[in-house]
Length: 279
Image 1 (cartoon, rainbow, N blue to C red):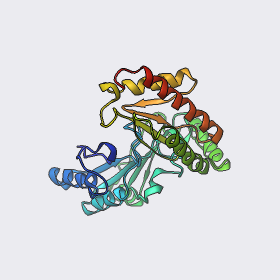
Image 2: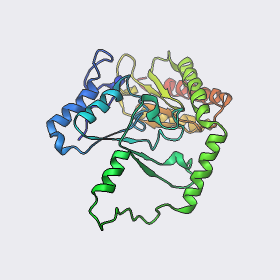
Image 3: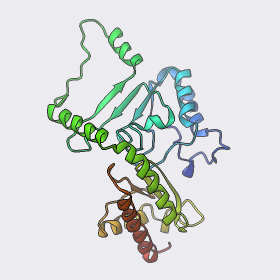
Image 4: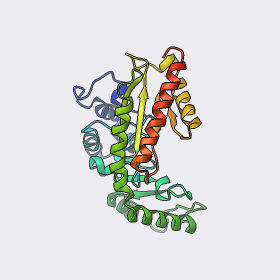
């Protein structure tokens, strides 16, 4: 089952925030009511929608979502695979909105991608339920081949030591704010830019046909794929995600490097827009 995403720029319910009164959160409750709360085990959500377009939630969204889950005794599961370990300027994305999930999945950032490692954090409530209600004599089985791989766990420890020692979470917050400011200054008035958004070093620029929410040129991802290609030609990797170009530099990025990033993106957008049919 899927409910409306907290994606204000492209609200699938046709609403406008804040007049909508968090209709996307209320849609979650509507889905639960339609299906029957007793049939719903959990609500799974990202603190910031990642590959769906780098979309932070509107104010109050998670507070209401938590209320809904508590009212119906439904678990809240957070996917922090992208937003964990400093990406948003906090250790975990949940800290921005005071979220208290029942389970949290994480990966990627715990080793900075040097070796594969992922995990799940449990609330005390979930842990105690597993501990106390598992039938005696039946162990809680998690028998995967690479469980607790020593080299991967050692890489995670080393990586977390570096993040702490070099203040990379704090750098993500400070330089991320500068990145967002520079993106808005460089591209905020461009006629093909619909919205610029982000949290920490997780930012996105959404492109639209002027005066609409339609893809530039009328073809999905055509413009953003061309911009990403132009960035690559200029020596920078950027990701096209539907009508969004995602910019998520390393946690150690500097302000001077941000200037270079924004300059490359701006030049790429300008060059592609000039040659792009229908732009």
